Image 1 (tube, rainbow, N blue to C red):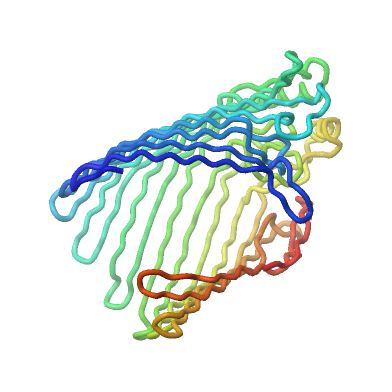
Image 2: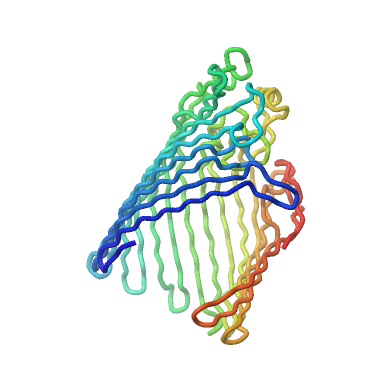
Length: 448
């Protein structure tokens, strides 16, 4: 990095390589990795003006993912962007950002792990691109701060599965997927009366999604696969969601050492492209990797979450304690459930011996608590830690949500000598026996 008071030029290179992981139980294969990252940027800063332009390239080669059916052979990613902010007078600041990325991605099941028979070779060729913009104005008036802006994301995705040893083999898994988001948002921070500090936010997002037609090399000889393909291609695949989010937070001092904080919020999430457009039973689940095959549902509704939380901030001369509790109710939570699609079930049984799960809207609840704390023993020594607990469960059936962390915490002892410090930290996890039956999740023992 070279810089003076107004200009800065940077070039960064990062090279990561790793062998397969060795454990006392043996070597985990394939877990080797190879990744290179290159970035260049230029920035200009003057009184009331800041400008940044950058470009980057991330190359990943031969990186094992043993929880998935295939390993990463290539991820070539190019990134470009620019951002600027300008002060208009003494109370208004305008900020704009733009970014673009382009990704080519290959995975297979034979380069890094024990190869199957020739007929079982698989190569997944995917590509995607995305652009993002953000424009907002922030201004101050008295003790209040306002933010108003618009942003958006436009993304495309494609994925085809082939067999390098058989030119006739081909599955068009995702074709011409588009997922575009346009958002309008506003925030206000300020005081309510003499006692309360507050924050209000509102966001409206419009999410548009569409998909092209799909195909499978066995559609001509297997009526069930042909039915799945034709049902998908004949369906109305264009979907538009209008999602409204809001948040309200309030902070009030109860004394010179205790503050109380309260918050309520609403959050919506539209389905991912895998959840909506996965037409054929596959382990293409956005990294879920639970061992099940899945199919999607074009007609999924967005998730709708309402949350309430309460927190205390206690501060004394040499200690602090910040407990927080929360409760979140989620309508139309997107979760895999046993498929009722008889055709998809027959295909899943034929391909892998088990019926797939299908992404569906269910009701779910999350609740829990966390707390951060610290204590200064003297001018040099201090203790600190975090404890966290989350409970996640289905409301429509008696089952738990998948991959919820058990009760866990950290405990650290720190020594600070002014110009340097050292910390010894312990990490602790309880056993988890509240696991998802639907996902076939195993219990796990506690560890530290």
